[in-house]
Length: 157
Image 1 (cartoon, helix red, strand yellow):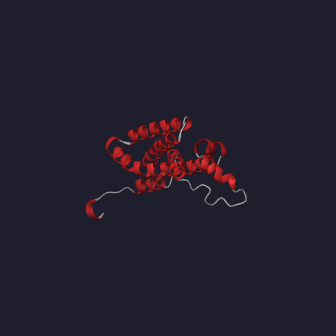
Image 2: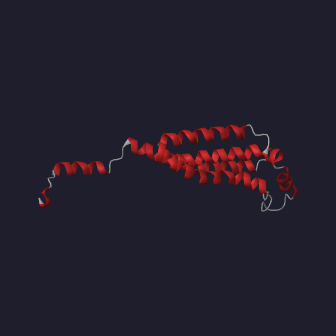
Image 3: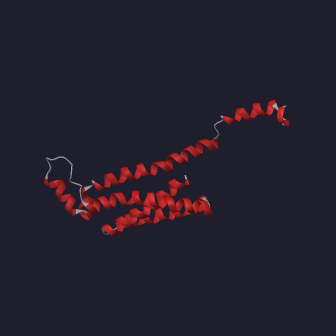
């Protein structure tokens, strides 16, 4: 053989067979990746549904509720144009974007486990804050913590 290398044709043939083999680990990795990526979509669906609920609007955004029901024959355009409602909605996505930079640095220096732990703790605290919120400030801080958790989770995946 040119170059002095030695290859075994049988070994190459067996290696080729495993190249396209779908293993349980591969399937599990795909499922975990898909679930991690679906966090954004899940939150979008939940927060979109919550922000249109009358009870939520009465409690946290009464001016939006009044606008929503003052013009029942009009379209939904500009009924949800409140700045605080926009901040509530977008805070999660902005926090997720910014936190991925910190998550990548933490993952590089301390490993994926540290990033998963930080993201999980942040997500848990954010969920508790949102569930027990009594004012809009608590809602927004909770959303930011949820965003940090999602950002860390997606970066690790």
